Length: 206
Image (tube, rainbow, N blue to C red; front, top):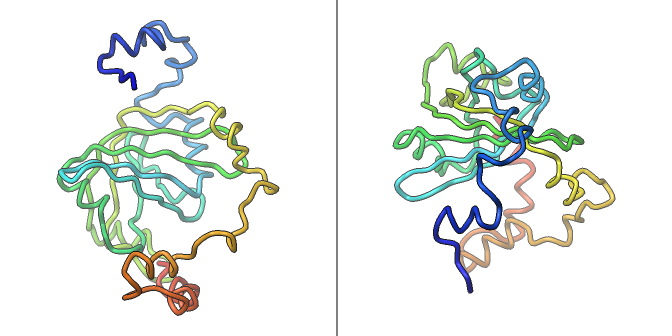
């Protein structure tokens, strides 16, 4: 197998970065522009990427559209809603502030990428401002924007991601309970886990 080990080898295949089209570079901003603001405001889902001593982590984040708050043109705020309590992303942010977000917008081909740094806030007033059903998050991720730009729609088009006719029937997939049962040699998981999940999720959503 041939392995690319240098930037020079890479550029022999793809060309030099300085030679790419202007459309690939002119779209990059160092703050949230009016048009990029609109994309953030309508997005209900983002993938959060962080790095730390144990390696990389990519975590799904979802909420009502606009769940990532635009505090100002260079500052974004995202509540850490309840999850599996592994806090992998948060552990990384505490030890290495580098962070990236990839926003998806249902039905749209354009995605939005943001790179920057972040810290965790426990300010009581800030936490309270993100409360849902009187339940506030325990922390808020405060991100400083380093660069922001849209990604072209090719990946969405190739995958036909938003085509309802291409949706996979969940009944054909292994359930969380089945996966847990196999991985834990049946110490946890199983049919009862799946049966209880909808109510457990309802009670712990926020």
